[in-house]
Image (cartoon, rainbow, N blue to C red; front, side):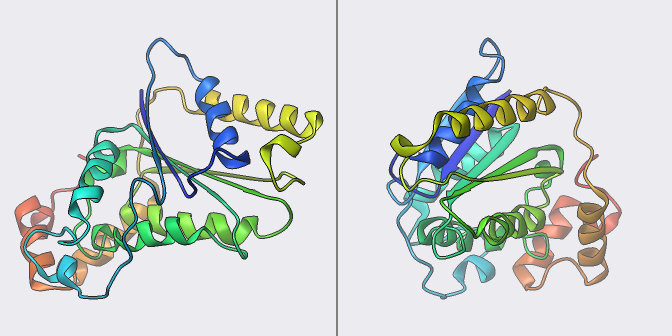
Length: 230
C-alpha cells in the first residue's frame, strides 16, 4: 500500500505526529510513504489566470515544477492523506493554496478517473475549536476530485505545541489511529454514490465546463458511457 501525506505546515507538530501515528500503525512490510510539507514543497499562490482550466494541458505554468512531483505521488498512491492544523477556523493558508491549484482536477473539469478507486484520509488538530470547518475544507476538494472512499478525523489537542500534549491525549490519538489503520487494510475501493452522481451530472452537462474539458472527457471515453471506475 502506497500512502502520500501532504501536511499543511512545515513544522512537526501535533498534526504531523497524528499522521505518523497512523502510518506507524499500518503493516510496515508492505507499506511505503511519501511526505510533502507545505509551503516548503509547494509555495505558490493562485493568480487567477485560468490557464489551468483553458489550456490543453491542465497544469499551472508558474507552479508546475513544484506541483508535478506531488501530483505524481498522489496518482501513484492507494491512500491520499491530507493533514492540517486549524488556523483561524480553517485549513492553513499553505494547504488552501495547494487545494486551489487542483481545482482543474475537479470532476466538472479534468479529473483523474483512477482516484475513484483510491482512499483519502483527512486529519485535523486544534488546540480548541474549528475542526469541523477545517475537515470540510479538505473534504470538499477530495469529494470533487472523485476520491472513492474518504475518512475524516479531528481531535482537540488542548495544546499549542506537540511537546505540550498530555500523555492521556497522546494515548487517545494513538488508539484512534490504530483503529483507523485497521480500516485502511488493502481492499477493493468502490466509489461512493456521491462520486458516481457527480460524474453522471457532469456528463449530462456535456463533459466539463470548457472546450478543453469537453475534449478531455471525450478522450477518456466518458461521453460514450465508459465509467472512470471500470
